[in-house]
Length: 241
Image 1 (cartoon, rainbow, N blue to C red):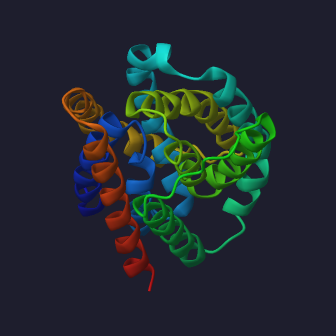
Image 2: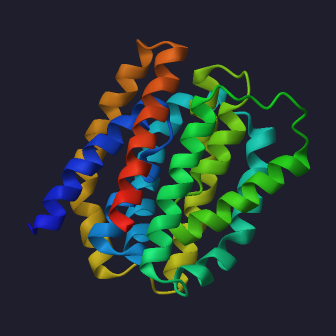
Image 3: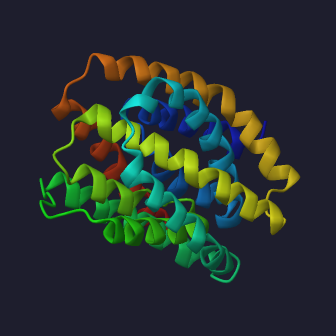
């Protein structure tokens, strides 16, 4: 194993714990590190391949709590804007993407840690707008999470519902993103090899994180998820400077 792959295994295990516990955030955690280790294009492919397997692992246990009437329009809008994001992925330089990813993660975490809540109505068109922005960002950086996290975690829904909604959203969008990247020839042999190498540790950690969630409370859920994401974002900004 290369030095980069050894480091990536440790990062993937930590991300898996976060994914199993919070239902979201693993891609946001891995991306600042993986962009530095593998480059932006490979990072997107590696993360989405790992994430789709983790989503399939979590989906059966949360499917009854997913609010499909809100999640479905978001997922369709995200899929529609992914081709535009895919074009930007191969057009922008590595340093710009790395800094943008890290800054987006940090600002999203700080906004949610401040206790901000969106108490207005959540009509279908608002969900569509959030989903579209998310799909664009997911194709560019593998990080469609920030808009969705802000939108869902700013509500008063309980942790189990938010966790389920994240999982349902990823089930809809990751399949579309993998198809898009495959058609563009971006799922290469190196990407596939790296994802397969990281997957066992990630999936085991996801299972452990799920068990930890069962004994947690609402405050712990938010503190753990947002605290780790903020640290990952700040580290990514440091690496890109």
